[in-house]
Length: 77
Image (cartoon, rainbow, N blue to C red; front, side, top):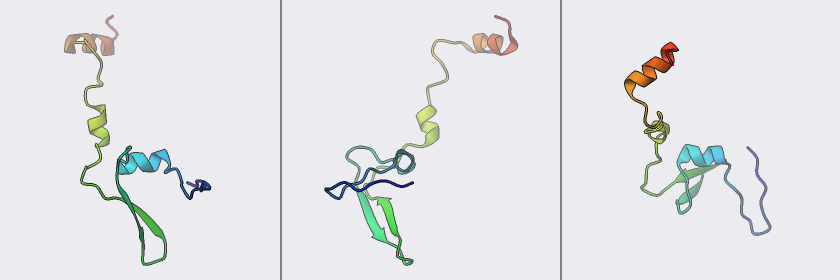
């Protein structure tokens, strides 16, 4: 993923990278030089990123009972 450096020396971290590291406004990050000369971006604050499963918690649908869901899956509407 490539990005462009602004005149102020700033870059936008691509959304897939922000999502992977759990970077949100206010997150602290660090740039480190790896042994091979590449630069590594790491999140340094203590907050753990929310897991992709936790993000889905509570999204199964609102107001449907188990019986209603089973009826829908069986085509008994």
